[in-house]
Image (cartoon, rainbow, N blue to C red; front, top):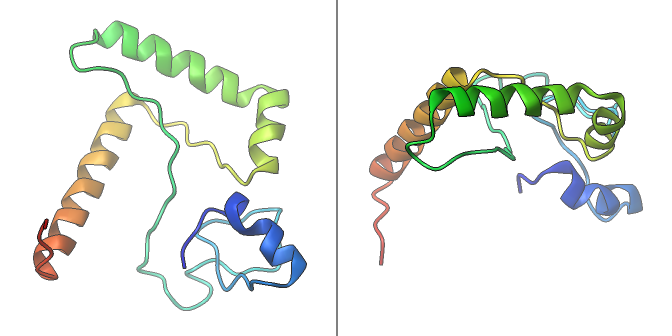
Length: 120
């Protein structure tokens, strides 16, 4: 199972589950190897909590939202809360975020085609 750390950390700490690998280092599981360290360097999986806006929002508004969100995530109080939940901020520009979403969508589309997955 690939789950976000906050969903399973209590089970790991209680011994009911074992963390085999994480996608990125986290202080919550300091002795758990990354996927690459565990022998899977080509697996790239991310759990993402993202902020999006409706189509047609001006570029200036998107830029301002991005700047303010990045500023907030860098504040010590919010950074501490994010880290406590194993949420690792990514400080992308709106353009880099859009490109990453496009690559992710293309990757899932290829996976669906390759495996013959069809909607019922």
